[in-house]
Image 1 (tube, rainbow, N blue to C red):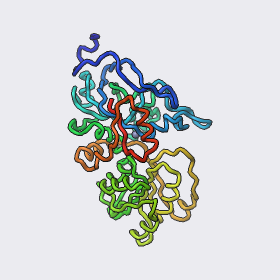
Image 2: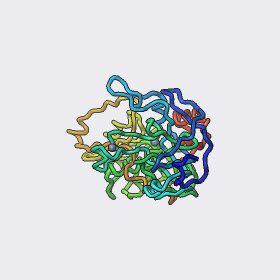
Image 3: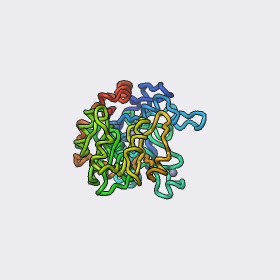
Image 4: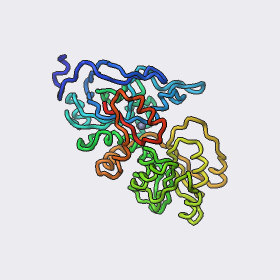
Length: 370
Ligand SMILES: [Zn+2]
Ligand SMILES: [Zn+2]
C-alpha cells in the first residue's frame, strides 16, 4: 500500500481493476475493465451499490445537442467518462479530512449530489450551487466520473449525505430524482388552498407529487396516459388522477376550481404537447413550473402568458438543498418505492436498461446494481 494511504481509514482493499460502463461518445458506451480509481486527500472511495438510469442518460447516449453541442452551443459532455449520477454506495476508503468534512465513516452508506460545485463562481458564492458556472456533474465530465462502475471516487467539493443501510440500494439512489421533484415543488411556492396539476407520472413527476403531498395543498391532480403510472401517483399522494387517453383534463380541472383553472402546473413529461396544455389549464395569475428536458423545440402562444393570464413561468434544475428532505421521505416510506423501482439490472445489462427507459411502458425507475 502506498505510504500516502497510511492515514486512510480502510474498510477493505478493492482489487486493482473493476468492471465499468465507459462512454466513448454518442451510442458508443462499452462495458469494460478499468483500474479502480484512487481517492486523493480529502476524497472518498465508495463501492457503488446502485445507480439509477435517468432520462438524461438516455438523451446523452442518443447524442442530444444539449450534451454534445450544435451550431448554437458547444459540447458539454465529455468522452471517456463513466456515466451515472443517481448514485448510492458504501464508503470503502477515506482519510481523516474526508471523514471530518462529510461526517461519514468507513461502512456508511451515502448518496452523492449529482453536481460537484466549484464553490468559487458567482452562483456558488450566492448559494445557488446547482447553477454553478463550471457545472461538473457526475457521469458527464472527466473531472467527475460517475457511478456505473464497481467503485467511484467522491471528489472534494462534493455534497455527501448518509442514508439508511437497511433500505434497498435502488431506493436509496432514488434520492437524486426525488430531490429534483422536491426542488420543482419549492419553485412552485405551493399554498394550502392550491389546486395543483402535475403532468407526467414518471420518476420526476412522482417526486413532485410526493413533495406536493408533503405540503398538503387542496388538490393534487396527476395527468398521464398510463393507468399504471396514475395508480402509482394516487399511492404517492395525488388526490385526483386523469387518464389523458380517455378523460378530459380541462373538464376535470374546471370541476375542481369553479371553472377558474389550476393555481400551479408542473410540467414533468418532456413532451411538447404538455406545455400548451399547462398554459390552458392554469387560471389567471397562475404559476407554471417547467422541469423537463425537451428533445424538440416547443411553440406556444406567448400572449397567454402576458395579455391573457399574466402567468409566472419558472424553470427548475437539479435538487438544491432538497436532499435531506428527499432522504427523509424515502426513509419514512412515504413513497411506494417497491413499485417505483421497477427494474434492477447487473451492470453488463446497461443496454437493456437504456432500452427500458426509452420505451417507458414497462418501467418507472431502472437501476443498475454494479
Ligand atoms: Zn437524474
Ligand atoms: Zn460554481
